[in-house]
Structure formats: structure tokens, C-alpha cells
Image (cartoon, rainbow, N blue to C red; front, side):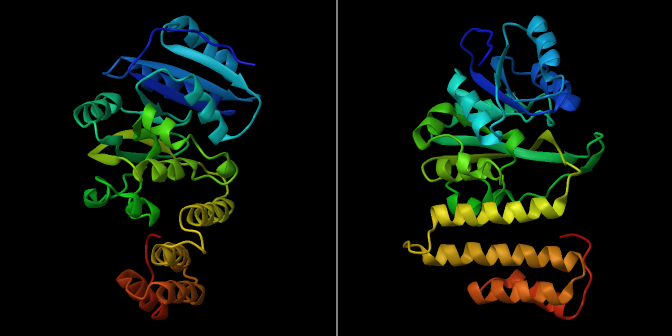
Amino acid sequence: MSKMRHGFMRKVSVLVPSYNASRYLSQAVDSALNQTFQDFEIIIIDDGSTDNTREIVERYLKRAPDKIRYIYQDNQGLARARNTGLRHARGEYVALLDADDVWLPARLEETVKILDADSSAGIAHANITRISETGDKLDTPRRDARYLSGYIFENIFLRDAHLSCPTVLFRRKCCEEVGGFDPGLTRLGCEDRELWLRISQKFKIQYIDKVLALYRVSGKSMSQDKEKMMQARMYVIDKFCPADGGNRQLRRKALAKIHHDLGDELLFEQKFKDSQRQYFKSITLNPFSAWSWINFFKALLKIKVNHA
């Protein structure tokens, strides 16, 4: 069952999937409505919320009926909620805004400018600042722009390039060409990165070296999240570089990166022997990784690090 308010054709479709996120939803929607670039529609996909999400959206439908559409569906997970939004999107470009994130005022203006200027680019993206559940600023990730623009499929696959979801703007036709979000990742996460991989196989990516959004870090169980993230990474590796496929070297590098990242987490937790084992597995798969060697010796010498 869906409820929609129909507006005019817009340049950008903003997809806002929401599941029991009424605590933050108003802040997210307000940050979209307050953009310096105003040629957009907002599609709120209520993924079976049991809180007061509907009441909040109804207020916005009265306030901005020409901008906002509301779709309710039974709970199906983030990937399917975004795909529902994509099916209803009418904009040339699509932007993603999760209900607990916040856009800075120039977020759309900056990314639209990039795609308008470069017809070969399928995605424009930028940096984020991480915030706590209460909105306190935590940190701004360091990004190496060399890895973030161009035809960067391998960089994304090996996790040398990270595209921050609340800053991404992509061409709707590119997404239609490669298919939407993979529902197979619904309970694991990484469905956004998997789509960026498919788009980056065919289209150029453009990076803007600015902070354009605030990404809220959840306080839920990190150990459970890490396990799911590792499962998701294996799913993506098997999908793009299957064990019986041709690109075995890329697969080995990707598997090595998983062990390296696990080693980093264990080193941060001062579990030195466990981290040594992970770095050794990484080196076995990719002996040319300088950082795996360096961190292996840090673990061997029990050198403490202050970040994972």
C-alpha cells in the first residue's frame, strides 16, 4: 500500500528511507528542504515503522506538498526500501539521505554542478563529518583524493576508496542500466557500496574535497556489526571476483584486505597474538602490502595504537 503526493518533474529525487527513525527524521528532512539548490523532490519511504513516523511526515506534506511524497510499505529492509524509492523517482539525478543523517546547505548544489559539467560521470560524492547519536561532532575522515575520482572500480573494491552515502549523487539512468540495490545484502549492509561498484565498472566517479553531510554513528553493538560487515564483504568479493573466475589476483588482494582490517581492529584492542595471525594471513595472500608488514611487526613488538 502506498500514499503519494504528486508534484512536478524535478532535477533531483531525494530518497529518504526510514524505519523507526522518528527521533531524527525532522532534522534530516529540514536539512533537505534548506538546500541552496531547490529543484528536487523528496520521497520518504516508510519501511514499516511502528513509531510516529507517519505523523511527522503528514506535517511535512502540509508544509511542502509540492516537494514531498510519502510511501508506506511493510518492513523489507534498506535495500528494498531504496529500490521502492527508485521506482517512484522522476528526477534526472538521485540523492540518498538516510533518516538519521543531515545534509549541509550546499550538498545538492555542489554535487549537481559536478554531474552537470561532466556527462561521463555517473556519481559525484564528497566527504562527511561523523556525529554522535546526540549530534556531537566526532571526526572527519581523512580522504586521499587520488583514489576517489576517475574510473575507480578497483579502488572501491579493495576499499581504498570510500563513497560516503549521504553525499552521493548519481544519474538515475546509470542506476537503471546496472540495476538497483541488491536485496541479497538487506540484512548484511554494504548495499550502497555494492551499487557503487556496479556503476563504477561503466562510469566515471567524481570527488569533491569538501564536507557536505553529517553522518550519524549508531551506538548499537559494534561486534555484531563487524561480523555482518565481514559477511557482506565476502558476499561482494564472491559476486565480483568468484573463486572460479578469472581475476584471481584481485580476489587475493581483496581477501588480504579483510584480514588486514581485522588485524587493525585486533591491534587497536591490544589483542596482539590474534592481530599477528590476521596480518600473517594478509601477507600470505598479498606479500607486497607494506602496511600489513609494518602492522605485523607492531603487533609482534606489542606497540599500542590509538585508532583502528
